Image (tube, rainbow, N blue to C red; front, side, top):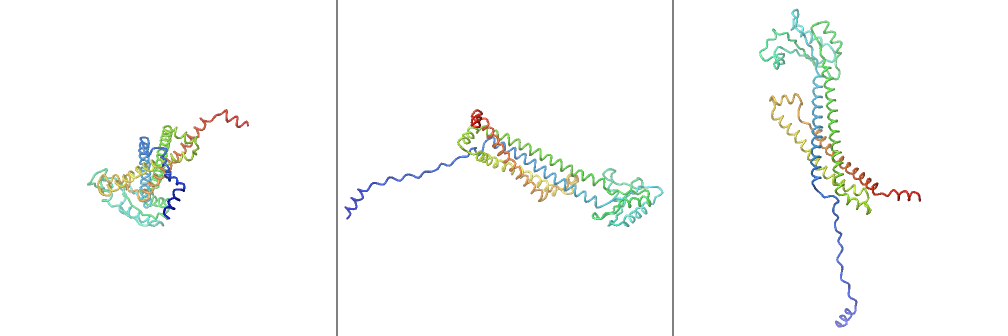
Length: 337
């Protein structure tokens, strides 16, 4: 039995040796993952993102400060009484306050005493002032209802009639100036953002054309063997998306750290001359959650804008290659047929 099985096995044709399974070689990217041009572009995008986020945060900070100033100024009006030899100043102050509080829309009235007036004049005239020796006007501060303000014209006319030395300041001039300043700041900020974005777009265009020029032979070979324009553009788009994400994240994080450090310094140096002056000019350096959200949105916009610019530039360049390589005589002959 064993001999018969062995003879049968020898008679059967031998099975061909099993071939090794074919392995597909992984394709490499068209563009190198990192080079000098890519690193330089990432640094430029980081700088542009830092400037854009810094501008956005500064605009929001100034606008918030102006809104706070506007709210404080709109909440109060001032009655100024000039000194006169024939005028009892204390009685005139009380009378002016009572006349103002008689109007609908007023909440409270406060007469600034000699000590408060002297403190207002300390930065210019120093300490130890004797107001009786100086022709210094006295002030009455009236708190008003912002949602239902009084009739300022009628109040001004009544005060002028009863107390000729009195002058009503409703702060409309200051409010209008603050509104104009806030609007101007916003316009300037958006102008700076547009300039930064424009410079970044031009930089990306030049960088993309430079990369295309260095890899032009690869792009032409791929394109002429059947690679679609969208495929080549997608490869460049992916390359520049990685660069823009790294650059935008670096610039945005640095800008956020600047605001965080400035806010930390301001909170640790309260009641100091430097902090008081900075707060008076710029307000608080805290931009809040909305400001940091705006920085994040700016990073996304920069990345998307860079990627879109690279894609459009590649598609435009390939279109130019097709125009250069095309044969006008052959095209005319095909159209004639």
